[in-house]
Amino acid sequence: MLNPNWLGRLAAYHPDRPALCFRNTWLTYGELYLRARKAAGALRALGVAKGDRVGLIAWNHPAYLDLLFAGPLLGHILTPFNHRLSLPELQALHAYTEPKVLFYGEGFQEVARALDPKALPLEALLEGEEAPEEVRVDLEDPALLLFTGGTTGLPKGALLPYRQLLVNAVQTAFSWGLSREDRYILATPMFHAALNALATPLLYLGSQVVVEERFHAEEYLELVRLHRPTLLFLVPTMYQMLLEAQAFAETDLSSVRFAISGGAPCPAPVREAFRERGVRFKQGYGLTECGVNCFTFELEEAERYPESVGRPMPHLWARLVREDGKEAGVGEAGELWLSGSVVMKGYFRRPEENEKVFVWDGERLWLRTGDLAHRDEGGRFYIVGRRKEMFISGGENVYPVEVERALYDHPAVKEAAVVGVPDPRWGEVGAAFVVLREPLAAEALRAFLKARLAGYKVPKHLIFLEELPKTGPGKVQKEALKRLWEEQHGQA
Image (tube, rainbow, N blue to C red; front, side, top):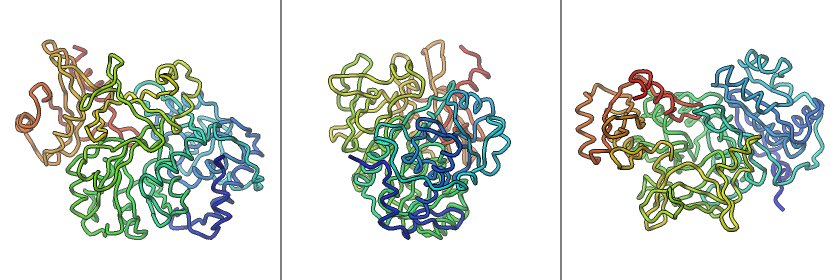
């Protein structure tokens, strides 16, 4: 049986090995586990019991890992909140999850106390007596409650059991070819999937993780200079910001074995810019409810098929299902369904939502991801967008991701997002929201697209913005773009 308290074993095996760096200070595996035991003791003194949610609102901080690794010793469920949300949004999530106690980091006392007058600073986690090493959980107990993107309505809380965290760590380490010698800068928000994307797989191996408190391109490049990471894992927006940083051209990237882009497809010009600096690139794919790393690719093959996310992880099954319920053929788009030991337990207190996403088919429980994909004859998968984002123009399916890729091919385009909007003649047409690097006429961009896309795929509307609205993890908020369109043009 797998051991949920694997950090305790690693602390016993190599207590003095560096594990985590924060604010230029390294914590060893022994020190990291000591912090977890103190956190478990502090929570127990506060009356936290198995199954209780423990809230956290903070910038990236070791406290996220303190609470995660304290879980096997007490049985609580770490529930991190997106600090970029408004107070009313946070209040709704706090009421939904009802944390037994809420901890806050530097700069968040006011908002935390507005959510819970008894909220405590992070320092309180390390003031308790060490908890016993007795493991109080099994593999199906939830370890994490992570909120989905929440671009519309109240985000749902996905319950991730220890089984999922362990299998994801093992699969990621094995399939991505990670080793004890790898080093990684954790810069994506820890309130989202950054905890189990690459941090826990690397710590599981005895590797090293450097935590950047708040992502800043120049600071990140300085951390690259100081710590010589072997892996990069960022969302496309962050890679773009690194390219624009003054220090990028001078930063030595020779230590990097490869870079992975998550959250959304990475534009080809961004990948090419890193490749010119000797950095090899992979596309990643995952979702909060499953994984978080769902596909794998050998590096050489990933470079030959840069738009593909690869093939399913060894202990994950994937299928593509058409609207009529039949399997999609080679090259045919269908909704991506996933099944395996990395699928979540379900949404917290949302049985009606569970019924929408879980499907029993034979002996397997499938998760409907809501993402559309196709696969080629070699079994490689390609994500073409969200099912709800696809629109039909004049009877033809249009996948926004395909149009966005064509937009990114223009050197003047910095960022782009496409949504379907109502049209009296065609039913729906594309509206492209574009951020430019340099001046460019709409007709020139439209002519560029017409040379690359079928006519019905070329956006009828081009809207130039200073920036695109994004969620905390850096994903473009397409619902916000639709609202902007409706405000300017009406519903019809």
